[in-house]
Each structure stands twice: as C-alpha cells, then as structure tokens.
Length: 172
Image 1 (spheres, rainbow, N blue to C red):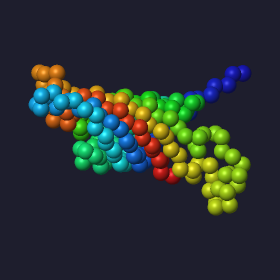
Image 2 (image 1 turned 60 degrees about the horizontal axis):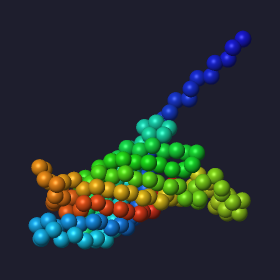
Image 3 (image 1 turned 90 degrees about the vertical axis):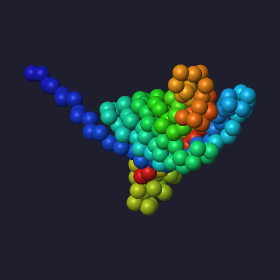
Image 4 (image 1 turned 180 degrees about the vertical axis):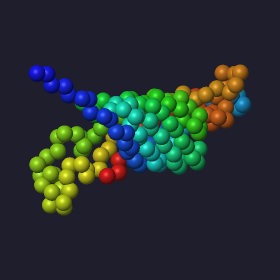
C-alpha cells in the first residue's frame, strides 16, 4: 500500500511592530552652487509585515521623522527562518527613495531561550511565543532625480542617498 501526505496549506498572517531608525543622508543642494554635505536623521515608525507565503511578505511603515516630519515606505521581502534574516526591496514614498534593507533577528527570539527565562515565563503563565521579538535593520536608499535631470530635488528632499540603522520590536 502507499501513503500520500498532503501539503499543509499556508494561512497568511501579519506581524505589527514599532521601529526606530537613525541614519545619515548625503545632500546635494544644486540650487545653492552645488553644496554637498551629510545630514543626520531619525524616525519612529509603526509597521506591519504581512506574510503572503511561508517566506514572502509585504512590509509597510508610516511614522514621524526628522527632518521630513513624516515618512512612509512599502516593500516586498523574503524571510529565511533558518538563519533569522530578511531581505527587502521597496520604495520610500516620502521623501521618495528606492531602498534595500536587511533585517537580522536578535537572539532573544531565536531558538536559544535559556531554561531560566522559560521558567520565569511559565511562572507568569506565558510561553516562549510571548517574548517580544526584535530585529536589527540596515538599509541603503537612493533618491529619485527630478524629471529630465540628474539632480535630486524636492521629492527626495535633495537627498542623493541615505543609510540607516534601526531596531524593530514586534508586538505579542
């Protein structure tokens, strides 16, 4: 006789998180005699990661930022659960940039949970799944030139490129 095992159906799910970022942008003010300089920035965002398959997800964020006041971005990514890493490519809507991002899961949510931590969780009626998980994020972004020029204008807030580092905390 033969046995046949059906493939388990994937059920889409979402993860909500908060994220803070710090970074630096390379600015070109061509309308002021091509002044170039580095400018710091930061943001505080709320986001959502919706898994479309076991590895593929849509990542979206919106929040407060300096110096742009507000910011938002959306991307598509692939998650590797074996090593706890994700890669994302997408667009920052404001200020407009195309970005790539790499996320690294922290040890807190990896399979290496100590016995003492599990005991403390059990005393509170919780399990390993109740840990607040976090990820480090690193991104590189390129501004969008003004139409018909090689100059980076108001859509990108004169930013030619940006690099950021951030930390993301997922809700229970």
